Image 1 (cartoon, rainbow, N blue to C red):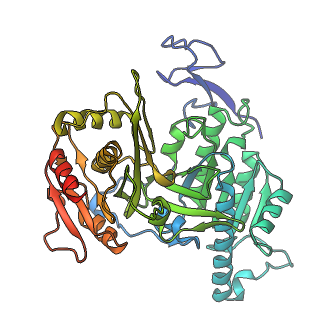
Image 2 (image 1 turned 180 degrees about the horizontal axis):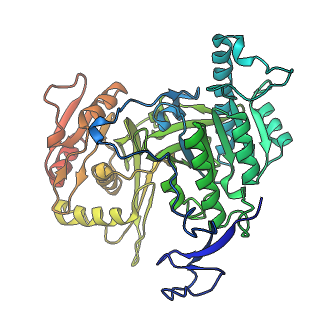
Image 3 (image 1 turned 30 degrees about the vertical axis):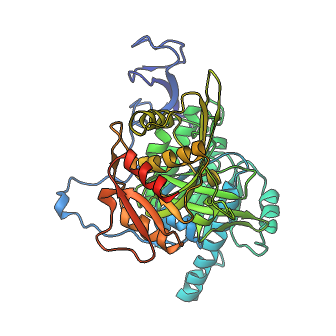
Length: 483
């Protein structure tokens, strides 16, 4: 097979050049030419090829819409993040720090899926496994698939087998292929037609059609595009493992995240036993959904009650601690917000872990202006316990109450929770799905809540006293009366 011609395309203007240049000849932009494959008759054919199957023009109301079938992975927390399980022809991109557990979780999931597919095949009868005339296996029958395939580009087959032994998967029937050449991987996918395939990792895969090294922007983009087309054409669900940069983002072009159907991020400290998997993008489920796992000697295990790991076990209430109810996807979770306020001298520090640093500075200004609590000469440290990252503004009220508690040296009452967004005018805005948050807190034994007035329930919640407030100063008065 003749090697296809490569061209260099400008990321800024789309201009092309037959060879690499430091400056684009069309728009004069520097270092914007990226290598790509082009056929001889149409240089932009592959660059703009569709990733999904093409079809005729159809009226939207005439298209039959049905829920996609999902195959559970055997791990409830992973299924929650995926939106219910693996989708036929879906492409999932999962990234995380080295050693955080990406390969471990995927190997465990593949083993569970393989056992499910084997059981389904056995229940379907012996004809699916019949040999072709002449004794050979012959081509696979229509609809017949080959279970699970694990393509490893960073480890040998022996290393994968050793890890499976450590995880207690001694008799795993998952097929393993140690290969990094794209063309051979695609040929294997066409031959075996697996239900689910894992590519670990996309940065190690290279195509012979490109001269750049594996892991480069051109190779990652081209290999991911070919694998995505293969998934959509064959119905094989493909999981791509991606490396992350030092600032925590997925390495490679941003277009890689637009190609795939689902983007998952591993979060958490490698020195802690807990791991979070967060859905950043999901065409088949809710975004910002998280799954909580605990790393054990036998791999990653799902945590059924994640609120327990985000709450410190204090014998008695301590100053600077306030529990809030955050909403991650469809799951309300209780998280402890801790604050430490100490004398800081002429240049006080503002440090937050798990929360937005700029928002912390804004909240301190609101606290001073509208509640009369000044922290101008104090160091303020805020932390979300358990390594969770809270991005929603519903944490504002809990942060302010934790800071005030630490500054006064008085603990909040036992069984106390708070949530609500705080505006620059000092108003306390409602949080979405406040009723679910309150019910989750009541279920875990919390008895006192300070919430926005718009989130006050119409019917009282058994065992819980709810104080509805409209402004920050009202919330401070309520807390002072309770302590």
